[in-house]
Image 1 (spheres, rainbow, N blue to C red):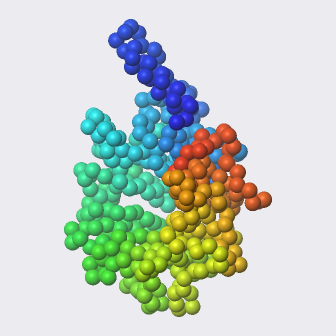
Image 2 (image 1 turned 90 degrees about the vertical axis):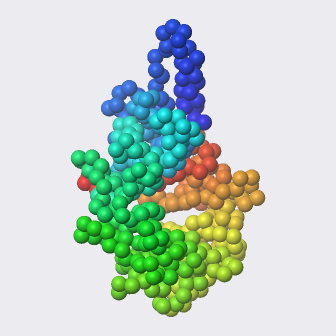
Image 3 (image 1 turned 30 degrees about the vertical axis):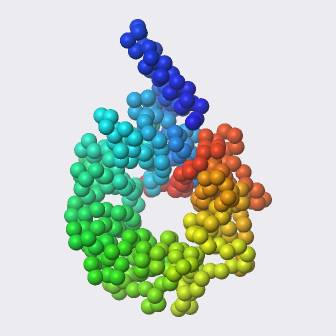
Length: 410
């Protein structure tokens, strides 16, 4: 627990103990807060690393950590932070976990969403604070899917308040939200007919782009987009499919060997790459020259258990977080080269590390079960970001992202 939060909770405990025993002490300030709202940040800085641990959200910019504190103890989130993201306009949003005591008035077992502007503001749609999904549109508009079933559909934040997106109440259970390269809202849902369906919002209405007759209609789906903008889906039992000419086909007309898709994407050269299970094997496969082939570099047998994450560096190097070793590797010259080796699968509570690249091209990771946030220097050394001043030192499972280098409308 952060020292500031521990001190605050201790003070609150004393206040509670003294209730009814004379004049109560003044309400303490929350950690890293100030009574001067003008001193609080409005949002993220362009290109900043924005992260959240269990009790803090902060950004690293200009060589220092800057907190996003509550404006008062009354407006501070009361449950733990789980994830954070930044809109195209620089607005910070964070998800907090549901309360373990949902029977308490005002508390919920569902996740809650908070946005930041000189303090945290709870997203509430018609007094409903349960949030299942959220996304920012290309213009920075916030879209939310409530969680408790009281408010169906997708809701859009407007200057006049929250408005339901037309036709979204009929989509059924909404599983995911995404945006096409052209800015089209794309939704995966399960409507009344029980078939997993992909929809796109065009011309003021939702249009189904899959049908109940697709081979993957009973699968869980992940949405992506090919280099030319074509819609693609990764399925839980039928591989990867791409929408071409108004219908879904498998790449090159060749069945995808990976049936249960974990992740898929295209390399900078346009090579489709898929992680997941093919028969009894786990690993990476690529579609190139009209055929599928497994990615097999020399050295460690990467992906023997599961690929946790993969991506390409700004230099185009395939990089993998391997769940069987809880380490990060790069495929260089046909050989898997270890990059992050500070964690091992034999560690207690072993966790694969998450990684991403900064706008400057540096590899950053949350350290797996080692925790914290780390950056790979040009000299090949891993250093904790912000050093000992980091609010996330040693904290496992830190969620992080990078703010856009240029904000929309700036």
